[in-house]
Length: 141
Image (cartoon, rainbow, N blue to C red; front, side, top):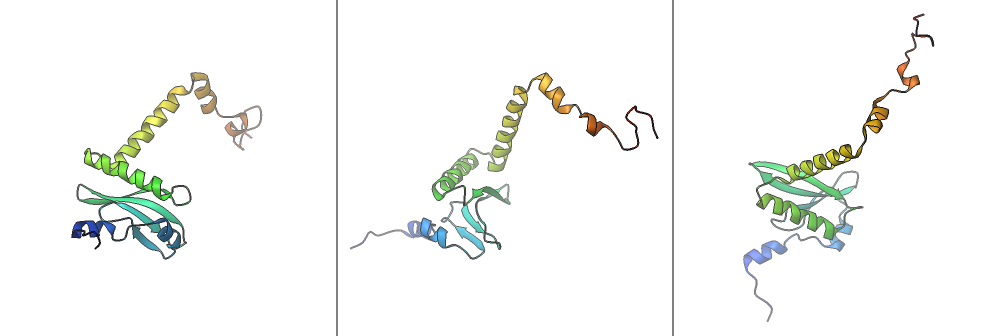
């Protein structure tokens, strides 16, 4: 006799994505990775496929892109969705966590730039500073 499963276990197995079902997904729409997982494969009308994490934060539904199917495989998408669910359990929105990480990265990159590099980047070049209405000596025509 087979193993007896409860209704809850059966609900978690419904619509669970596998590598084979992902490769066959060609019709535009959403393909859910399982009940309550939040991981969704989105197939657009053009045929491009990408991973989404769907969640509800403060009674508003949010969708966050986890990456294209070409660059993110199923295992990585599940790992990223698990990290998003962990952030939700900690009381943080996954989009807020991503924005904070991007801001932190941008600040660290900006701190690595020296003053001379900033000055060189902000200084206009000689050709860009001229307007068509001025002569090379700076006098108007």
